[in-house]
Each structure stands twice: as structure tokens, then as C-alpha cells.
Image 1 (cartoon, helix red, strand yellow):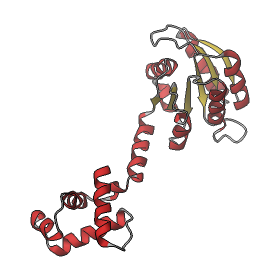
Image 2: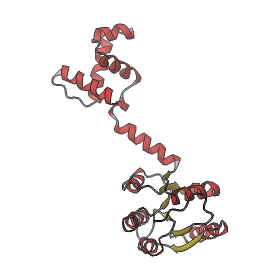
Image 3: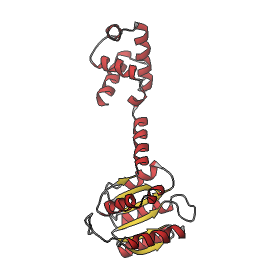
Image 4: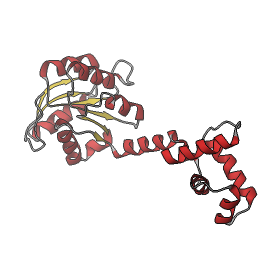
Amino acid sequence: MTVRPQHAASLRIVLADDAVLLREGLVRLLAERGHQVVAAVGDGPALVEAIVTHRPDVSIVDIRMPPSHTDEGLRAAVEARTRVPGAPTLVLSQYVEVSYADDLLADRVGAVGYLLKDRVANIEEFLDALRRVASGATVLDPEIVAQLLVRRRRDDPLAALTPREREVLALMAEGHSNAEIARRLVVSDGAVEKHVRNIFVKLRLTPDETQHRRVLAVLAHLRG
């Protein structure tokens, strides 16, 4: 597939949105900016056909389309990218849904974008994202990036530790006993023991073989 440079004045675009007013508004906006909408469709199968037929520089796709108005647009975009590998695609959504971003990024090819529809109101920002996707970049809405980072933190067991528990674990990694940790942190031995128990629970380390759990906790710290 030929990739246009980011500074190219004109893009050939396929547009998929079942909302007629929004679709026609985008067609007019894009035409005014010198771009050519080679197909404007309102459902998933028509989107796939349009991309396969026209091989556009980029496609703009609403995630929610008929018949169920859930993720038909996204699934059609993913299908189109299997039939036209790497077909640049910018999807628009009313809501943040992290799993949609995962689906788009799954093929690891790039040339994808996921923006909230609110971004379209900022015309220059929207057109810049469109050009970047057409040139092969990956463009994610800042809100979606934030949600991805939150989810990664949730998936990371170390993220569940409090700042004090992280301090205790770091000292464990240095080989210090509970008594030495208590001395260094100026807390009681009992407080350190409680922190250590919490660390084991949060890292999902089972209660048999205490010494092994301590080693596994340290390994988790090093990997983190």
C-alpha cells in the first residue's frame, strides 16, 4: 500500500457513519479542506466493500453502527484490515472503551487511530490526527491513553501496594530482616510484620513456605 507523506495536501477517504447529518457534515468539511471522500456509507458491510474497492488513504469509521449500534463499525474496520493489510483507519466513538483500542492495535501494524467524537469539534486537531493515521502513525485519544494506563496499573500487582509497603519491599529486596527494616523506618517490629503480610496478600503469594514467599515478593519487586 502506498503511504502518503504527512504533508500531502489531499487524501482519498472512505467515511462510515450511520448518522446522515454527521456523515454529510464531514463530507463537506473534508471537501473544503481539499480531501476527496471516495465513499460515504452507513453500515459495516458497506465499509468493508468500500475499503476493498477503493483502497483509500484513510478511513473514518464510527464504532457504533446498525443493526445493534454496539461495535459493528469496529468489527468491520478490523475485517477490512485483514483484507487490506494495514489499511489506515481512524475510528470515532462517543465513549471510552479500552477493549476497542486493544482490538484495533491487535495486529501491531499501526496506521490506526481512536478518537472520541468530541475531538471532531476541534477541526485542526481532527484533521491532524487524520493525516497522521494516513501516514502510518497510531493516534489514540488522550482519554483512551489514560484509561489504558489505569488498566495496566490495575493489572500490575505492585500497583496495589501502598507507598510504605513499597518501602518495606524495597528493603526486603536489599536483604534486610524485619527487625532491621523496623529500625530503618523507625516503626515497630509489629508494624513491619503487618506490612509484610499485606505485601504477600497483595502479590497473591500463598501462605506456605514463608521464606519462599519473601523471595517471590523480592522477585516481583525486581521485575516491577
